[in-house]
Length: 90
Image (cartoon, rainbow, N blue to C red; front, side, top):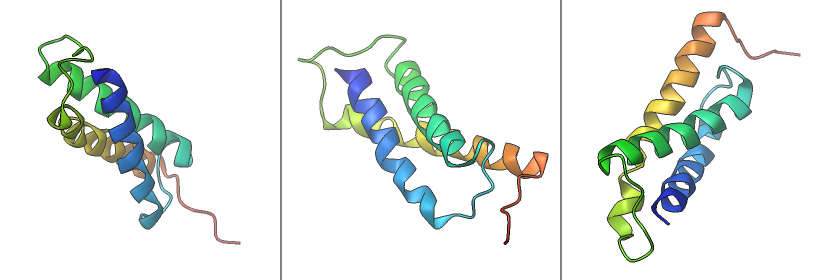
């Protein structure tokens, strides 16, 4: 249940990427993967390499994923900028 909370928080944070220029590595899908994977990995690490069960999941469990989601989005963004993924202007 904790993994579900982490992934859903990553998905929620990902929605705010519409306010950024589309320079993510892999586009908006790359930002999505960065947010979800980052949230899961960070939550997993901060929980001591265990996934909290249904009885151990609290609001704080979901909030633990926020830094990981932001780090994942930042990695996708800076990698996209490094590779030159500039938005196409038609």
